Image (cartoon, rainbow, N blue to C red; front, side, top):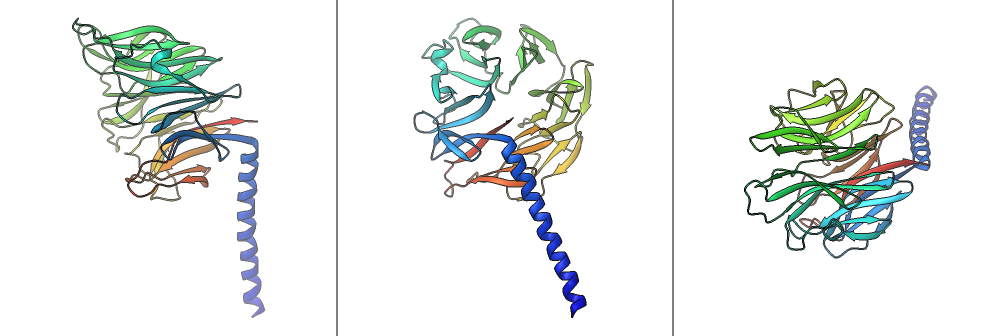
Length: 343
């Protein structure tokens, strides 16, 4: 009997020790980093810092779609959920700006704010609005605003700009876009207001920077590709994925060579790290990877249930740290965006 008990006790001690080590490692990471999660609860925009919620001053039925923290200032982009072209808001430390007013968009105009970036306390937004121009191909103006000052990048007679994304590198805005050049449609990206064509793209995503330079994610021939812009080299992520016109995001750290690609809802329960499919091992029912952030080789993920309830969870290195649920068929609670800073 002793020979049976001793190995069992050793195994039990080993398992407890492993769990303790994991929790201590997670506690160390939690104590060293601030994790910000933006979304909504009870149909109101809010964000959480290390699981502590801040309600954003907002009308009912709003959601926070993106959060950025710079110099201890918390910036949140959100919108009214009532309709496709509802009101958009920017909160800085919970002081709200109505973006339609701040950006000088006519009160009667249809518009969408597509993305936000912050750089050295300068705020940038990209989007389009209806100019009501009677001139063909000039009705919808695609613009970037820096601190409220507008630059028109492109105009067209229909809405073609809805997937554009914005990132800032070396104080220069990079903007993905499909545009009309006066004769035909072109796909590619802007650096400041100069357009660089990348042919045959059907859908544009965002940019990220690693030790190899700036990388641009897009869809071509129903597959994810990214282009390393300094060498103009195109890389296929995976030929077995057919995302069509789906969400995608490329994520990296400036001091690492690693690249991550997520894509909701076509990359269910996995992402690509350096073009290798990587499965998230926990909670396969939460199969949609909504957002990802990487800092010091730690991976922070928001996952959602791809059902009418849209329950959400946050994981740090595959350990669940935060969750939110919904009453069945009521989409009033969600995590949408994650951002991490180091103490």
